[in-house]
Image 1: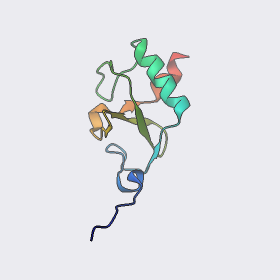
Image 2: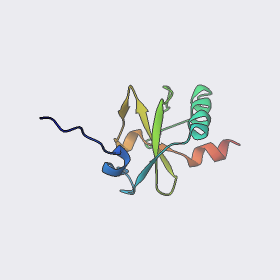
Image 3: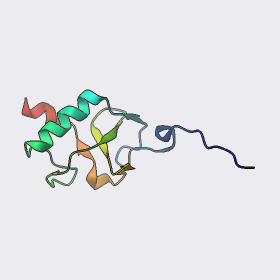
Length: 91
């Protein structure tokens, strides 16, 4: 007999930078991030240009970082986190 796993991924993972809880990114935020990526205006935690749009993602507790989802995989590498403060600086 097999048991079906029923869990919320966000309850199991934490931000690799702040160690805080994560919540699913809102579609509006993802649209803003992807537009900025398309314009060549987004860098990750280590200053590398982000060139690939995100499918989805998780935001840390203080909404300072986006952990992207690409190819259905949550990228939990701190260097790959996208600082969200750079989005407000562009406006």
